[in-house]
Length: 380
Ligand SMILES: [Zn+2]
Image (cartoon, rainbow, N blue to C red):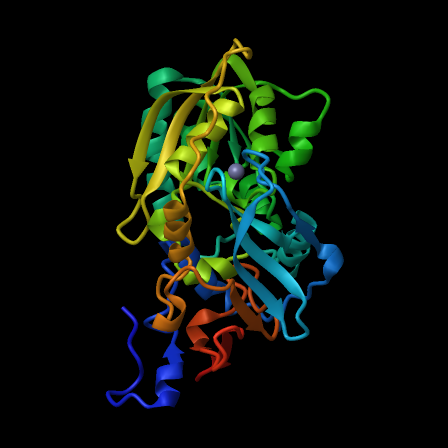
């Protein structure tokens, strides 16, 4: 619910909404704690220019070129560095403009601490619990063997799988985290960059690949999923898990730089089928009380690649409205009703490579002109 400051609403107070309580994005525990830790890192801002951006004009999932724009984030000089759209045909939500992988690499270097401690050890407890649930699912089908953990983060989950007898290799792009995997847990890191790894001419095939909370961060989910089959033995399996859009998206996701796509159960199922996998089992997980509901799939590569794939169900105009309204959750009433113009956010600088801004230090300022941009005011 949106509340204004003070009991008497003047025009000014109506226009000024505090982010601390009302606009706190529904981040999971992991992200919220990481963000809190990152505030202690002395980085005034993260610079960006046009060569740092990638732009996608057709739906990566169904190749449709009609993309309904949802939101746009730009700097004061109208330089748009982040924009979100939804495919009018299949309903896949993705970033039409976003910072490239190379830009993130530079940012990770900026926050590198050389410390072998994760940002917050408490979050690793949650990660361990999460991997314990993956383990229960995986070992029903593959009780032992080689395992590749893609997006292993601080390696806590990989270490758990290693404890239970799997021969674990990791992939992790962030420098800080990769150091913890190799130097603290002593596990082999086979690559930093997943796409480069999958493009290698020859790669080892694993009995199990764990790919959890990673796909939504990658620029080419379809390309990556197609290639991931190459890293799995013909009788091996893939554990895939992503957060589901309707469970976590609010207005602030339009500023959330590290999410490149948002999945529904339908778009994810279509993606896995079209990329040559069949589903053995699915599971919904809420890994902690404050985390959103996630969707996990145990998949195996289909050997008969000629198997016909049903085309993805076309969505309706009503579905588009529902999706666009997710990005209006928590906004003042003037912005809540769709159809409306694209949501525009103007920011002074990128202060965080996650949420763009330190939202808990900001108030949202609604423009007098309904076509104007939403801006942010610093509060103490
Ligand atoms: Zn599409």
